Amino acid sequence: MTVYIGFQGGTHGNFLRYFLDKFCIHTPKITKLPFTQNGTAHALKEKEYSGKFVRYHPSNEGWRNINEPHIIITIAKDDILNLQRLVYQRPGDEEQTIEGDIIKLKPHIDDYNAIEKLYGVEAKNGIPRFILRDFCKLGFSDIAKHGYLEVDRQLRQKLLPNAFYFPVRSFWETNAFIEQINLLDKKFRLDLHIDDDAIDIHRQFISLIPQLQTQDRARRIIQKIKSNENIEISDIDVIEEAYIYSWIETTHRNILAPFTNKFFSSTGEILEYIKWYPHFYHGVNPTLPK
Image 1 (cartoon, rainbow, N blue to C red):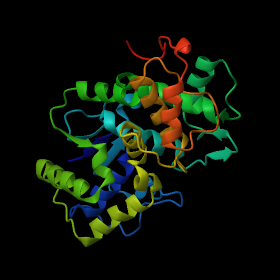
Image 2 (cartoon, rainbow, N blue to C red; image 1 turned 135 degrees about the vertical axis):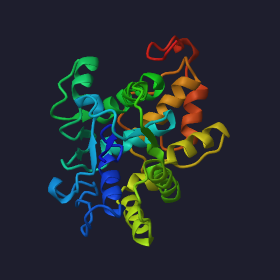
Image 3 (spheres, one colour; image 1 turned 30 degrees about the vertical axis):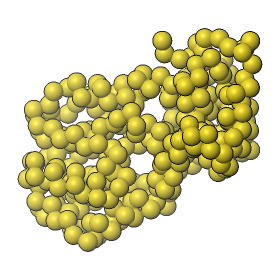
């Protein structure tokens, strides 16, 4: 029996393939770790896997052998902030660089074309911070149309006869991950041997993704704004800035967040900006869903 793993890029399908192959008692022993220097799970060559678990992107390649068992990694609205941070800022097999306020994305990210079309600029040599922030803000503000969620809907619409839906958020906490693994094992009768080594490998996986240590930081900042508390804002990344900008504009629909490379330095500064935003500038924000 072959088990297929259908997933979108950046949602940890390769790590899941490694984990299942390593801890299935019916596959050859894997002694190597899957992690590259950048922390991705792409270190092993295809020949080092058994072939029992096959990972692929149905949205790009079309469905394979739909009558065989499938694991579909799913995405919810609350996952988008973290996924956006991982895709843009987690080092992949290609390096990303930031030079001052000019951000050069990983070469395979398709958003270059979308940014060039939307803003009418040449983006191949890098994107100003305020443009990337605004572009990602648009995705958060009309979250139902976000590319990740649109593809997720397409994947779920395909009624596969034998599928297990694995929430991507479960990868980001060890107990939740093991819980899903056990449910998956029971459904497909994989005979997985989950021991302390399995727990340790998942913890290594988490430790190599620094964004997971701050995955709720932007939401905590917004909570401070809601409660009128003044705290310093520092060290957040451009995607978190975009998420906060989206909250400002969707909560106060007549206010536009500023187009500057520099972000607010405190929640108090954001509250002051909202309070003093001139009423004669109020107008319908054309980027918000009706």
